[in-house]
Image (cartoon, rainbow, N blue to C red; front, side, top):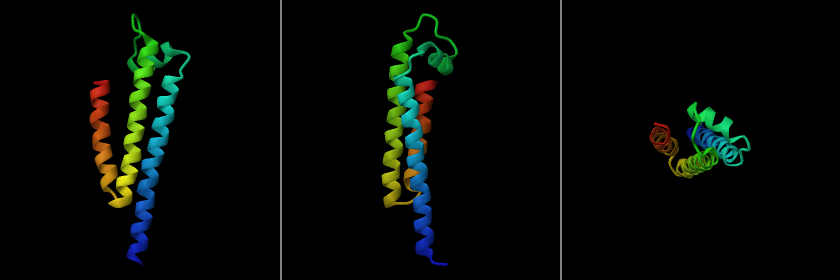
Length: 103
């Protein structure tokens, strides 16, 4: 087997995963920002929305999720240079930011 071909295949798969995650997160963030039924979206996030400004929560959460999408795009760029490093770095940051955002 050609080692260079295998490395190229691995690089393409990892970059594809990064870009797929970025796309999914981007559209989920966009859904939260453009949500018309904000009570239902906040109920999905927290389980309770009594006394909360649901439109603001959806906007802020949507922007955070879109930021995570940009993080995965950056991971794809890093993976293009050093395969595997970008997805590991981004996954650690994603886990950390998710824990900060949602407790």
